[in-house]
Length: 184
Image 1 (cartoon, rainbow, N blue to C red):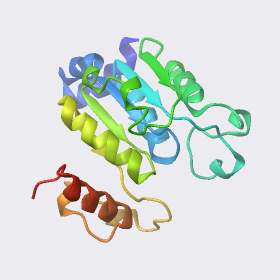
Image 2 (spheres, rainbow, N blue to C red):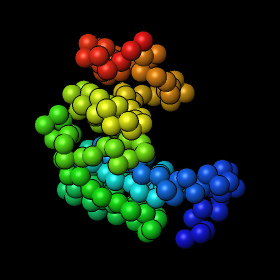
Image 3 (cartoon, rainbow, N blue to C red):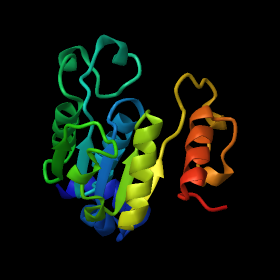
């Protein structure tokens, strides 16, 4: 599988070894999370675990990279792992078929990961994931509201305390401030 890393090595040199040893948990493998899984697998990340409790439906076909006619009705985690393995058979994977909330959080040890990607749509799930990742000392990247956006050039990468105009980010930011999880 050395050819998998040829172009990446041209870009980042020995950083490829960091990617091979990286452990990432992607929470939510639908719209945004599916593309994240695809990118991580193609970059050569060594461990990609996925968390989702949903199955693919016809309404996913136009917007989720892992959704195809053949995947309708199938678990998103199962399809995501198949996709990862079809790109990089050496990648270690694990599926968590659950809805991440405070009462299910103990089923996932976030301290095992270098990064957690939050591609979940529900505010309470996002809050639990952000707070638990912070408590575990694990870096987290949270995706906020990207649905129905027609101008991708307006999307930003920023600390949540500096976000604006996104209703989902506003709700998460306010609840994190109230709960002591965000300091400005």
